[in-house]
Length: 97
Image (tube, rainbow, N blue to C red):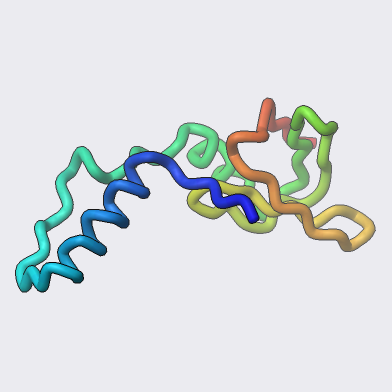
């Protein structure tokens, strides 16, 4: 089984676990620098919700209706009814049709 996490999330997880084990009653409030910025691709994709788009990836193009934009993925409903989830890290371009 493979697990993909970024270093900042992993550090935060272990810091929280350490506080639970040691019994710290007062958690530290999150700092502004700890919050990741919204990816630019997400801002672009949000403009095209419920519209036909083509998203280019290294594996090929995916076309259909953009149904959902999550924190790090986009979901497209293809014409055959298949739903495809594409991580932002795999997106090369977005084109409206």
